[in-house]
Image (cartoon, rainbow, N blue to C red; front, side, top):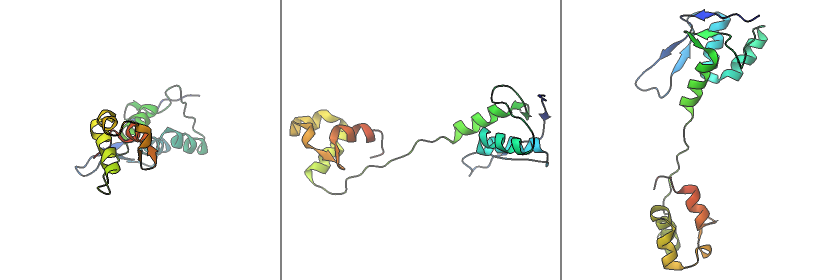
Length: 143
């Protein structure tokens, strides 16, 4: 039996200027509130496992619990999307050797200027990789 529960005060987002993401907490000790918090903070799968331990069924495909008027699945999706961050990589020249400088040039300006200087790109290795693979991998990195 599917029961929709309206939890008007189940979740409150604490937003502070120093926090990078919202943290959700429960105002009461109801299992539904706990599931909303788990879904928001740790994901829907974690909430489903906890619900199963308490005999509550959370459907992946239809509404089962509302958290502050929103479906529990939607809360989990919003939190998951906001916490996904791109890995930031910084590339720098460790020495002043010509090969190192060519690798940095390839990252900054592309492969064409490097090809003009050395001709065969396959002869240049950057961090043990072929220069073309190196550029593909790190072209959006901070330099």
